[in-house]
Image (tube, rainbow over all chains, first blue to last red; front, side, top):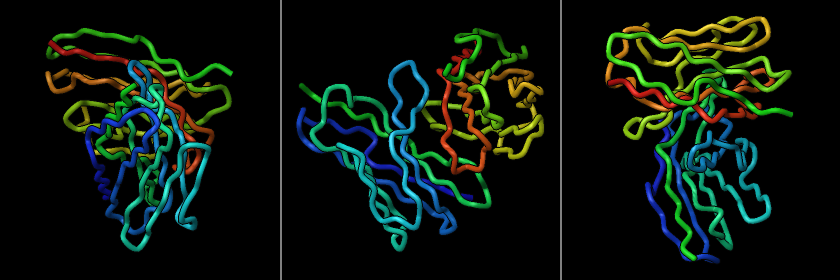
Length: 112
Length: 114
C-alpha cells in the first residue's frame, strides 16, 4: 500500500518568514495530494490540494509543488502569521485505494 | 451549512468494555470515513461507508466495526477495548467519497481506555 513520509516533524519560524514542509510518497499510482491543517481541539481542514497533472498550485500565501518523477510534494507558506501555527498533514490518494494515506504531521510554530 | 458533528466528544472506558461513537455528516454527503489519530501512529484510515455499505477498510482488527444508516449518519463500534485503543477518533464526510472529493472532518471523539 501507499506510504507517505513527512518532514520535518516540528518547525519554528519567525513571523513574516516562509515555511516549507516536504512529503514523499511510495505509490506511483497516487494522483491526488491534499494538505490539511489541524488546530488544537479541531479536526483537520483542507487548505490546498494538487492533482498529478499539475506541477504547482497557489492560493494566496500558500502554495504546493509536486514532482511526480521524484515522488515528492511540498507545502510552502509565505509571510507566516501567528494564526498559521498548527499541525499540518500531507496526504496521498491513489485511484485504486480511494482513501487518504496521511503523513505523520508537522507542528508549525510561528513566533511573534 | 452545519459541519460534521461527532458525539460524544469525550469518553472514558475500561479495558474489556465496548464503545459506540456517532457521526452526523454534512447534509447531502453520502460518504463517511473514520480515522484513528494517535501520537505514535498518526492518522490511520479505519473504514469508509457509502449508501449504508462498507466500501473500503483499513488494517484494523475485527474489533473495530461500523455501520451507516439511511440518513448517512454513521456509527463505529469498538469491542473488547484495549489500552492501545486510546485515541482521537475522527469522522469525515464527503459528497461521494471518491478519494478526490474534499473530506470534511468533525472535531473527533477522544477515547481514553483505562
